[in-house]
Image (cartoon, rainbow, N blue to C red):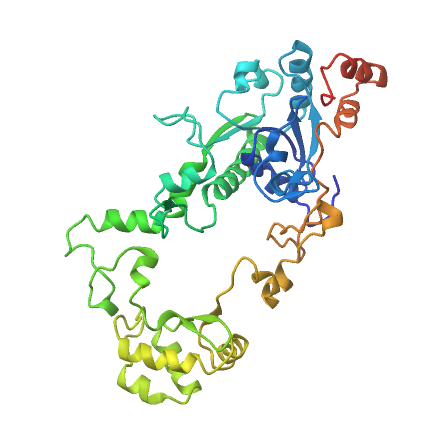
Length: 413
């Protein structure tokens, strides 16, 4: 691993035992310079064949989730495989169990077994529903955590079939991110105290936590109405939580432009005045000045009709220039397909190249000393760095060849 300023985790060693998407937890660490060694069975992690697209025989899920990592294939059902795993852990900072909790313990590699060889070890388990509770053993996939958390409203198609709507996955991405944050906090503590730390993260928990505003609003609304009210700009009327409360908004709403859509966000009176001045329609402000803060002019359909016609007069790019010029908040309304053409996206998130990581991929959006992390290495094939990793443990060539010949190490042919 390098020592570049934008690789602040250079020197952090992580041993990852993962299956499918939860391995993303260590990707955040690898992107920032950590040495992440993915330990796979000789047959490998079938993440390489999951979902779509499949790029030259390998899934994008694998190419993104395991970029920047090294892979060693070990038969952990053998005593020698278990011994090698412990050798890997001796000088590691972190072990990640990104699969059902207790999977490593069943192999004799639980947290107590590993702490016997490395007392300072941070041991993190990440799974679907976590290591406790009535759902802990239920098989599941990523969307389950979002439906469980109340993030998904089912839709019904023209034939009456219930469908999963078009939405980004939350739990399977945020769970690993929360776990990575916890790992870094635990590493700091372990290095300061010399004592190991055990962490446990559920992707379902993280999905719910990301919707804290709606969940907590519903709970707040269970209290008396004279204690918990709406905003003064709404005459204290309680709105529906989150974006559901934006449906009737007018000064905070999506409008059609000449060539697409923009989001208008003049909920502050000062921004609303700037807009009206900018379009030379001060009579709109004089008639509906609104409140100083948090005023969306809800249900004012007369004003909404006026704004609809105004926004149709300019292109999206022209409205963005207008927003900068007069100081009023207007944002693009992009799609996952066209956002890559947005100039702000291109400036901030230059995608990794196909020739470097197998597919165009987004970088970790963290600027360190003014730079994004360097381009990671290609996601490994099964056990691609087995010899390299074993040599780093001090195993000589003859021993490595013997381990390979007996199927203890190396991918299955």
